[in-house]
Structure formats: C-alpha cells, structure tokens
Length: 268
Image (cartoon, rainbow, N blue to C red; front, side, top):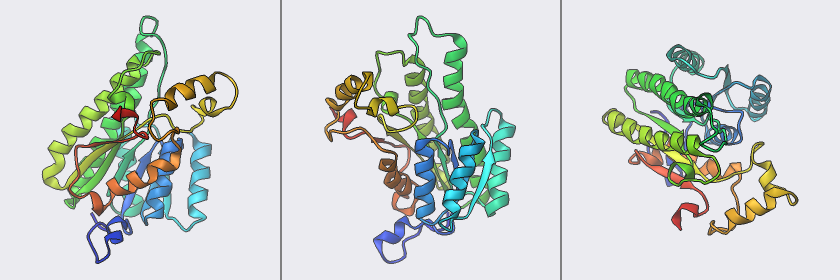
C-alpha cells in the first residue's frame, strides 16, 4: 500500500498520504472518529452508512478541512452490496488500501426471552456484515497486489461475558475476533494485515445515559469505573491513535491481533 513506507522520521510511518480508506458505520461515534483520524493522517476517505443525514454532515465536516471524501449510502447485506461498496471506493480513488469495519448493533435481552430474529439481527450486522465487506475488500487488495490494512471492531465483550442479556452481542464479537485471526493467516502472505480493536464503553448516542450525573446511569457507570484502572469511560477520540497505527506502516508487522482500548478493563 502506498503512503506506509519509512521515509526518514519515525513519524513518517504514520503518514497515510495517497491511501484510500473505507469506513463502514461512519455515522456512529467510533466510525466518525476513525474517519476523522484517517483523514487527519492524509488518507482519502469513503464514508459508508445507512443514516443519510448524518453521513452528509460528516462529509461536509471533513471536506471543510480539505479532506477528499466520497459517500456511500449503504448497509451491506449481500455480496453484491459489499462488492458495489468497494467498487464505489475504487471509482472515487482508483484503489483501496484501508478498511475500518465499524458498523454493528446490539440488542439487549435475557437469553430466555430473546427471539431468533433478534439474535440473527445482531449476528448479521456484526459478523456477516463484517465478513461481506472484508471479503470484497480483500478481493480488491489481492487484485492490486500491494498489500492493505483491514481493521475490524470487536469489544471487551468478545473476551468477557456479561450478565445483562448480552448473549448475542458477546457471541458476535467473539466471532469477529476469530474472523480477524483467520483472515490474518489467510491474507498475510499477500501483505494484507488484519487486526481488530476492542473498546469498552465509550460515549455515543447509545451510551449517553451512562454519562449522565442523574438517573440509573450513575450507578452503572460507577460499577464500570471500579473495574477500569485508568478511572474513566471511553471517548470516541480514544480510538484515533490506534486506528491510525493499525492502518499505517508503523503496524506493518502486526496482524491477527485484538487491541483492547479499554483503560485496562480486561487487564484485571
């Protein structure tokens, strides 16, 4: 992939100039942070997501800072969808170097009450959707024969269980970690690295209640903080450095790994 080779300074290893990146789930807090981080390191960024309004807002925000972007209004549900998504990136930038697969959902329900449709929805969005886009991106990277970077999104729940109705989510994120390792082994000989990040709770529209000073969020937050050595919950910007690292030449010998960005939550 271009933009990743050493050029004198160690900071040059993080330069993504000339690279083309695709971020799925770009309208989410993590996806938006990833898009801004990659753009800040010099990459052109394709923004993919199903929320058309938020997608347009992010595109305008990035282009205001002279970032070259393209917008893909799509949630991949089939191989054809994923292939069209990757083709749109190549049409816009002429290549594909970096993929961040941050699209996903959670449905919280006690296992005894969870429906088959609910379980399948979580697995479909978190595992099948990631596999579809990774497959399409991998095909393009193999065709280019210049390597590439694929970054999936797991969770601390891919490693740890949870008592409050997370059976589908935990299973899906464990599967994402298995997918990460399998693809790393398969595509490593072609110079494609495949890694994942594993966040703990971080600020987003879905978790805003946990950050509130009043209400049930305070009790839940304090219970979480008792397990986090750094003493705080996450913020979207906490992922920026890890995303740029895994996407860049600085991580050229790193593959098949899950980097937990959790303030030390999984350490104890």
